[in-house]
Image (tube, rainbow, N blue to C red; front, side, top):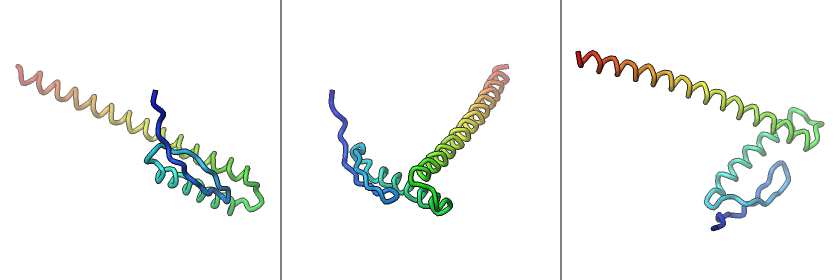
Length: 102
């Protein structure tokens, strides 16, 4: 069994430096994600100036989770719409072919 190759990435999020392993070739993406989280933490900390780092992190996590759930719901609705359109088109094609045979 081969071990997946990883790259070490040094990140700074809200003044805290952390080192993590990222899948090989994904360093830029991990840095982009960390930058997003850092910006979110800075935004929240500006709104809640007396909140601890832990509270800021929890609020950011809830905001990101809310975004994720909203996107999943939109994705589900789009997939349902697409499925309905495909079913409708398939039925129309079947009817056209059926009428051509007559």
